[in-house]
Length: 104
Image (cartoon, rainbow, N blue to C red; front, side, top):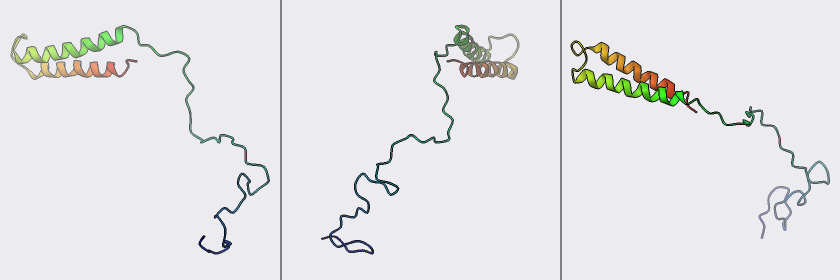
């Protein structure tokens, strides 16, 4: 037995309008995709490909920066172990990370 509420007949199923009908007319509403207002970028025609020198430069910067830091700690660089070598090594590694962001 259906619950009796305000404006609802005793034997009602709960539906107010007939199935498939709309409140504006007798035809069912056509499904038209509505614009969401968000920007959708165009589909690229071809995949972006980085030149071959980009990953080579990236690995060069990363490995040479690590080598400078390692050689500094082993005292194999000219002069005493110095913070300038550490900063140079970190700068090279940072250059490698910056180059990695350009790789596609």
